[in-house]
Image 1 (cartoon, one colour):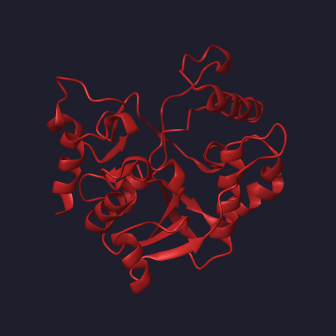
Image 2 (tube, rainbow, N blue to C red):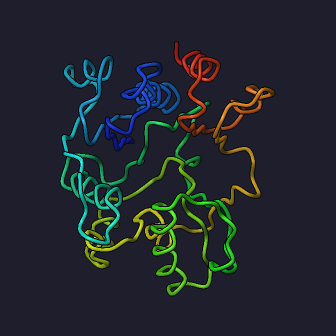
Image 3 (cartoon, one colour):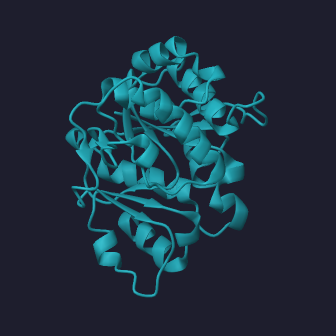
Length: 250
């Protein structure tokens, strides 16, 4: 199975602080916990161990520049993601692959069945959905789900920030059919609205993901690391956290 990390160095916590190379350890946890994983980086060339692995051919690399400015009214990061998806589609990445980010970690042995679609929850009424958003992300999410609620009565919040199992041909179809390089539509949510079947709902199953936003005084690391996957925010990248992540693979 191919695992593909979207990487923009300027947004990396490691680039900002030099304290913990989150991308390196994300890759290492996949290599350890998914048998036969082939790892790719798409975007900027990473530093340190990963750049050496790329030189040796142990990790594959697709260079794509970061979109610096979007067209008027378009979300820059979303357009950047679509262009990186097009680079993946045109590459030697396998037809079926797993989309990753540098703040995602495997915490235990993972099998193919563990990569099935997950959603945060079902949304009975998008207009009343009580999710907290940042300004730019919120506008992108709302424009996406305005489209989705016109497509189906079964609306789910697909933005779990978990590893996502995708197929290149299906991505290519959606990019073309919805002209996604010119629309504020999140391809991951659109993809699973089309192709996600019987999703696992994270608000009903607490065995799948830990997501740490900040580090609290009474943080229960044993509980956090008991799940299958971990997502960390920049505010939780502190020595007690990164030492636990490093201990998984070292």
